[in-house]
Length: 313
Image (cartoon, rainbow, N blue to C red):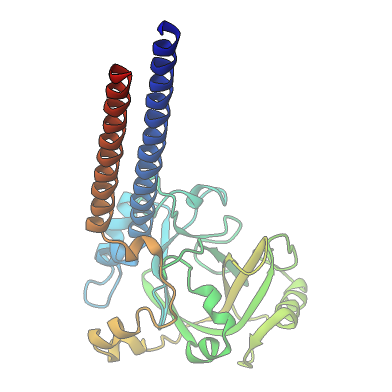
């Protein structure tokens, strides 16, 4: 009889330990999932162009707010806009190409980083070819839309942009889109000089997925907007444009905000973290807690029945 009671106690202890372990795992997984969703949401919020809108140089403010941003971070050198997209950000340049991978334009740590010019390039974009980098991110943040130019309709519909530096605007006329490898030294070579310019330009055009003839020559200045590609390992998507003294009109200024909102998610690219509001996460946590209490209640009921059965025997 004593051995039987000890056996029941051992079974009860094991049963209780299993329940505690299972509940602990459930709680940890739920907490981790909630944190991961919250953390991802914060990253995308930090990368949104609206965070920098107050600093954008315009004809009305004559670049005063842009100078305020430069007072926060002296390595802010320009402002880049690609018309018809959400690419509308300040451009930085560090002493190497690593700093702004995880530092934002205000000089603060951020996983979304900043748009930055290759450290080998002149900060006044006077080189023949200037390479600008940015993270590929979902929800059309940072350089997340560069890859969309792999669609011919996208490439044909978005021909112009703007680059503000040295206190004034400069037009960008995009003429090529290419997909290459991160280790393509023929492309990722900043500040090409002399006779190598024609070889470089011919190489870009030869590799282009799409291109338009705008009579680019080695006397022009070109800018490459580069980001990671999701289609291949170590792939890079690059949009190439020619800098111009002519400033092109932004078509977005001619559309109302309702049209912009309607087209915001036209390509169906959305991120799960932005589709799940905070109240949904709280509801999920509440339901998980209720489930845990129900399991505990069932376990207590089973233990009482086992104890009652033991007494009856």
